[in-house]
Image (cartoon, rainbow, N blue to C red; front, side, top):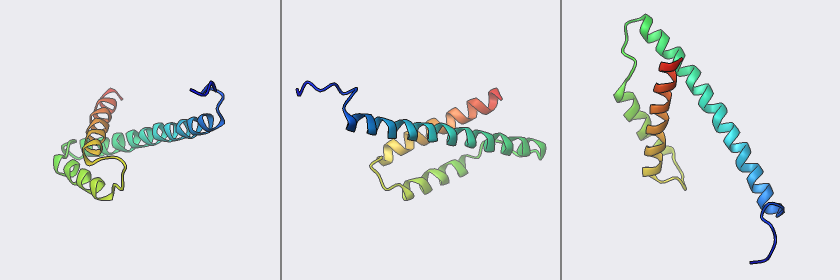
Length: 95
């Protein structure tokens, strides 16, 4: 133990700042995704099209898995994507 507080360590502060920036970007992207999904849902409802498209969801997961360069594992990506889908459906239903 070096005795240096991690709260004042420049490297730690810099990396934490980068993590905070990425987290802010993630929130902005999720919000953008929610707006697009709500727009799509409205269109589908107006045209009598079912909202959930399981084939599209599976295709998208496969597409993302092919595009993923890591370090996120295929299993982690699947978990993240399914959580995002579930969250999106809940949020749009609240909307």
